[in-house]
Length: 157
Image 1 (tube, rainbow, N blue to C red):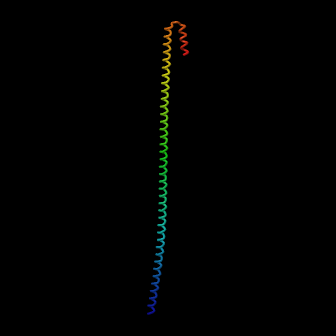
Image 2: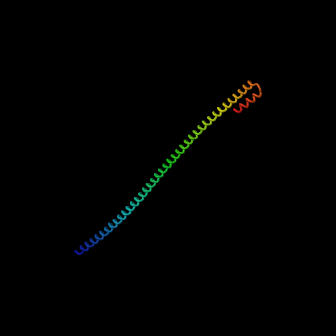
Image 3: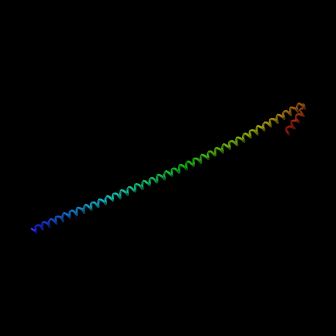
């Protein structure tokens, strides 16, 4: 009996060893699967982080481009506004110069007209004086020869 007990014990030990081996294989396999799953998870997290970082970088780049575009537009608008203001000032200056020139011309024309009018009055007054003198000479002299001489004297003067 002793031998049977020993055989049974040996069988039991082999069975326990076999079960332990299977359990170790199962644990080892589970650990390997767990390790592989952990690696996949880490890899997926890394990929997700890289994609998110790329998207953030792209968004920052787009924001920077947009900001630069807005600054460029702002500068262009300021330049156009400045150019328009310069053109406006030039036009106003030209209008002032034209108005001043027109005023001076009008003043000159008015002075010339007054001078002409004064000259015409003086000429008219001289002619009237000459006619009066001629009439007076005719009245006084009565003779045609004297009249012709008086007229000749007048034309010399």
